[in-house]
Length: 262
Image 1 (spheres, rainbow, N blue to C red):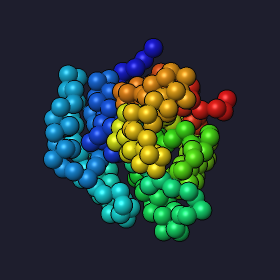
Image 2: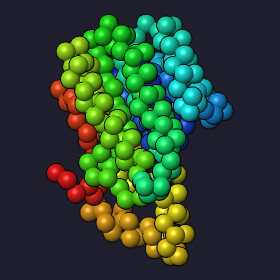
Image 3: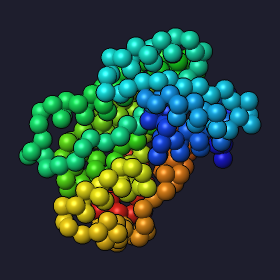
Image 4: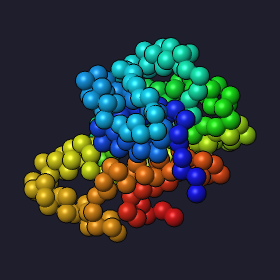
């Protein structure tokens, strides 16, 4: 099985913490040169310096704020124009705030669509020409299991994530002929800042301890535990390899079996 990413260039968004950082680490371990994207330059530099370089990888980073899609697009376009090859793009952005959908303001939907769908789309438009040139492309979107089963209390997120999944499936159909695959990884409850904030929020609303809320959430997962970020990263990294060339247009749940749909 060919898992070698030597001489491949990957762009990983949201890569200074959580799942994004774990994916960048895994891709580098498989031999890829990684371009990190996030807001905090100090963290970006720290992580870039720590990535595996055993195969002669050249890692770098882009400082960008995904709340401003136009700025991100200009930055990524300028970066891409300086590159000979880009093979892998991992779209990954933190989820919108929770809350009932009936209480969501229109601007919350607009902000979420900009952060996720619009940024993803513009990044893809920037890198696809180089992927076509190389006859090798892997576009991997980190979304949520809510695209298969909406999660209570995450109205704006459910709506936005579903749109991203549909966008990705449409694109997979268009790009497959060029050796470019488009797939979604759907993390379940994973040990990141996002899950701990949800635990804290539910605890405050219910008057229970965070430990009680966490145990209740874990009991609903067949694996009876939250995922480690590295476990989600392993799935994403596999989809980036030559071995995954015939996997296209799928939404892969990495959730310990929690999602109720088949």
